[in-house]
Length: 293
Image 1 (cartoon, helix red, strand yellow):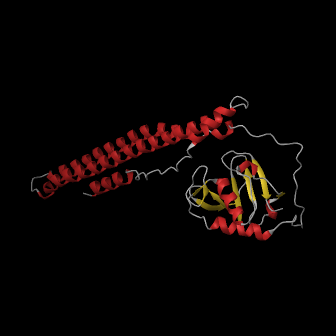
Image 2 (image 1 turned 120 degrees about the horizontal axis):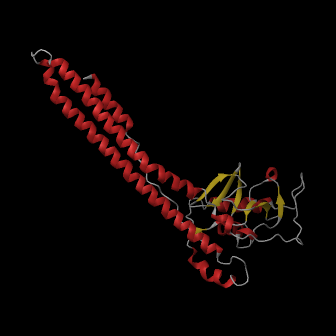
Image 3 (image 1 turned 180 degrees about the vertical axis):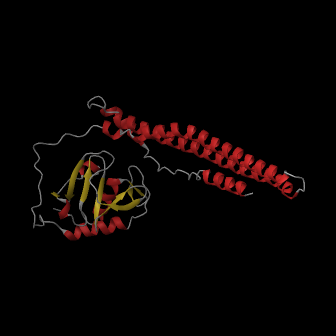
């Protein structure tokens, strides 16, 4: 019977882990951008690129969901087949056991050989099921690799730098005329919005997008910022080691606020804290800025 127990254990070990459901964050609703994109397309190269990229992202999201569902269905089916094989092996083994107590010469040896044959047969079938599963999952993994290797943000046009607008920079050891209280007040306002859902174009505590959060937070502190993320590189530029609460990390399509202790507060989905960084989905980083400088 030891052979049967070992075979059952091997089959159990072969069973793949359950696939957890994949919960992808919702994409912003870009429908409102379509008329604007059509309006600027005549005078701007790639005027409809934003909408096209949004369409690609939506397609990729749907593809990832379908791949995940397809993979989960095959894994679950394989788990069920292995359970069925285990039950079948045990049932047939139980039918052989009485022959171990037979007084007929050679009956015990025959029973032992049959149990060994059963163990090898069912284990072979289980291994075959896993091989079949691998043949299904490998192409799905390749599809996922192709999706994650595509950087749609690289197709978005970036605004050229203005050579006539010199950037004020805070010198080391100075505060650049900074109103620290305004920055701290803006952080306090932003922190009160932790957990707020992401809403594209959102500028109120009912829902924020990235620049809507920073604009709203600074408005509570009595400072008005431009509406668009890429235009919030105002005030004075600071280095990473000069960051203080209220400073902004600005990309060409995203903005976040330094909250202190090496953390940025930003409108993801929902508003949350994340470690300070200079990368964001392939966007060009415009630097750290102090609006009150």
